[in-house]
Length: 72
Image (cartoon, rainbow, N blue to C red; front, side, top):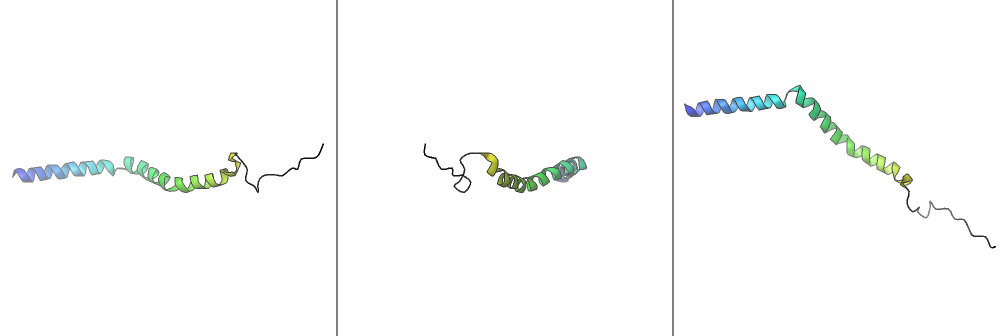
């Protein structure tokens, strides 16, 4: 008899916790966090690719302009 009472209490607690986690108040923020996690890496990679040229620093050989020094 005590084993069945323990099982009923255990199932009740599990269902209560599942109801909390599967409520719309939890699912909507969880979905938003998952979507941001999925799309943030490609967006940051695209921003990094386009912003890398204007970041400054030493120009490459193809970007540098050559201005010869004139004789005085």
